[in-house]
Image (cartoon, rainbow, N blue to C red; front, top):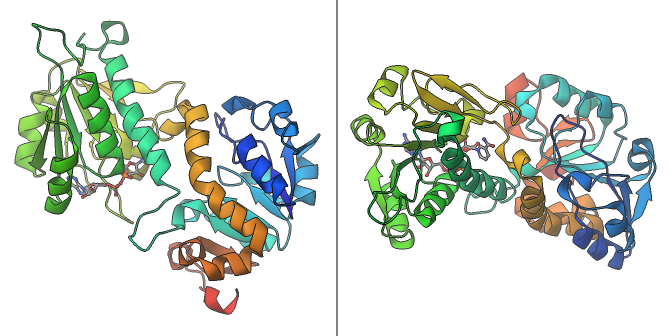
Length: 370
Ligand SMILES: NC(=O)c1ccc[n+]([C@@H]2O[C@H](COP(=O)([O-])OP(=O)(O)OC[C@H]3O[C@@H](n4cnc5c(N)ncnc54)[C@H](O)[C@@H]3O)[C@@H](O)[C@H]2O)c1
């Protein structure tokens, strides 16, 4: 099979879908790997690094799309890429179809086989191709929060770890899933005092066994949230209600309880945010201030650390890509129920119910198509 890796062209996207280690493995399986010139540069992988493991560098993006049996990407194809997608071509990437009807229609019209990272799902319910990005965002939330607490960025001038003789900073993490747990670990590692709130008692029980002693676990309700944010230097929003908008757990009026110059990092901003005053920002202009509280709300946090994010993402995506290349999409999906759930659109037919529902489209049974 020819596996094509175009350069990501969405604004500020520096990740790449395949690293040289993955290319080497595909080449040793007998596949041809065609990487667009410069595709890996944003993540620190030169064309020579791909050449060294036997991949070919394509001079043009058209060549990659025209030749590849399977396209590996990171972000959903953007409009200029739609016309390049070929009938029957496998496109393995994040799609987030429900967020864009034009994209959905374009993929239906292309006749490709769209396998979406975000709907590949393990029997435990875990979304293994979203987990690594939540890990990155959770860890980064503390790094960014610590930065914006510095005076020069308008923060209150608190060092999260304190020093001997000075109390550490207070970090409140709302939501104890992948993002929240990673944030709590990082903040605790810096020496901050952390309070993590979640509504799942089972999750809190589990976290009490695995998190260090400078993390307190608290049941999440309005009363406890207000009490903790009043003491917080950094509040991290990390709530997810599957398939729904995040609930606004901190209202604008609640901000006045917080100390001026404190920081809110709402990682859940991509689902509407759990802080009422949050609105999405970008890496160019990541923060704004409301009622004296610094708000950080970058909707694509992993994009800020593309080297780490690319490695984390491809560690998770590559085993699926290898099987798709080796067995073809039909057999690979028949063999693996998790990958099967990644099928969203097959040669003009929507097969993922959530996507069909979003736009009132008919849904086909993927079992009849593989
Ligand atoms: N901004 C970014 O770049 C970025 C990157 C990755 C993930 N995210 C977002 O971060 C959010 C969290 O993702 P995740 O992977 O940790 O999800 P997750 O499903 O692993 O965890 C969500 C947690 O929220 C808890 N929760 C639900 N309602 C709650 C409430 N009222 N109070 C407290 N906790 C509550 C759940 O019990 C669960 O433990 C999602 O919105 C995700 O899309 C954003």
